[in-house]
Image (cartoon, rainbow, N blue to C red; front, side, top):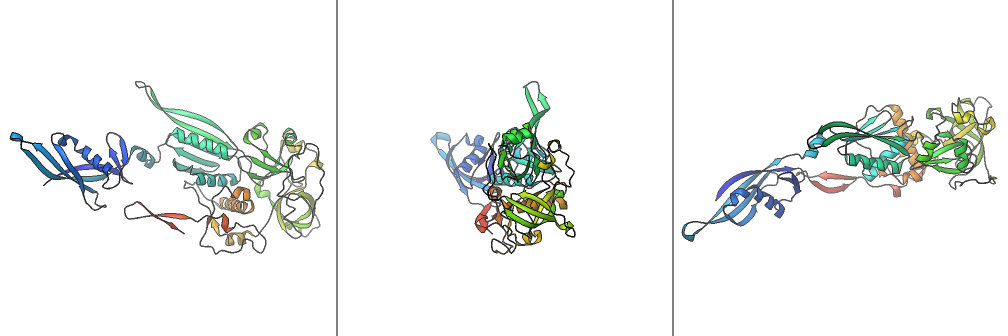
Length: 458
């Protein structure tokens, strides 16, 4: 029995290289792997007749493959000579061309630049969870977080176009595409481009107070111009705090009749409810739109917690009548003492502008964080910095998930085993996520061979 040695190239995951440029997946001691090994010695076997071929067992971690061959050849006077020998293959690790480009980090053919011209990042946190849920980040080479958005790098233009289509289906956006010539071959008439897709998300976030143009407000059922954004999904959801009338604005409508947020999120002030009454019978004007069934219209007297030593109170209507009771704390915007620099507000009559617009009920944030027995996953990305303001905005997004079931159903929420399970409501009545809405976090362990092992549930 004789021995001869050959080499064979393989990537992690038992994917072997088949010249000239094909990669095939073969299990150990399979017929496909045996055929690949025989092709490596095709030239020597062309002069003899192959009778039998089989694998000789080797240690799986040894990076060695042994194939036992039985060959025959006719010699002088019709005599047939038979011989058995073993071919020893050395498995060499090698990366495919695509993997080389991925590991290079700086190689990319297309980039999707997602931007939103707003201070708060609630929309980006929501978009991040949608990307994770539907696996849209799997084809990215790198994700880079910058001050006003995210950059997604891809190795092909088709993957970037797929990402742009996904963004258009999930949030109100508009985009522009451009490309830059990198190199060209005049002999084969081939060109190498780098493509850039600039995607802009509408500059409106949840809990923003906006002022619509008169034409847009009339087209939405004669609703008041001052509205509150209750959520941003594939459209902008607005509610009129004076009548509970709701409207949905898509991206095309927004860019045709643009509007901006009236107040900065840091201008939210804390009020205490002095008196609250429910409005039962509300006269609706002709042509009015849909009314929200999830909210209750209320008339409240509130006072700033910073002005408790005075007797100054504010009267307003609110869509939070089902949540507020005398003595509750609520966050809102003081429009009466705020400098509003908006073209639509400047043309409105002063009696049409409310003194205060209430946004949401205020709960003890420290207690809510301590009792939060769930968590979210995050995209692996390059960050510029992580300041305290970003952490505060992320906590605001987590509270929005607890308060809004419509947003929560689009997000994968995982149970945090480090936090004990308690009742669904706390002493203050702060909304919480039930265990039925949570998923178990799955971790995939790896065995010694580097292959995926059994699923372990935490």
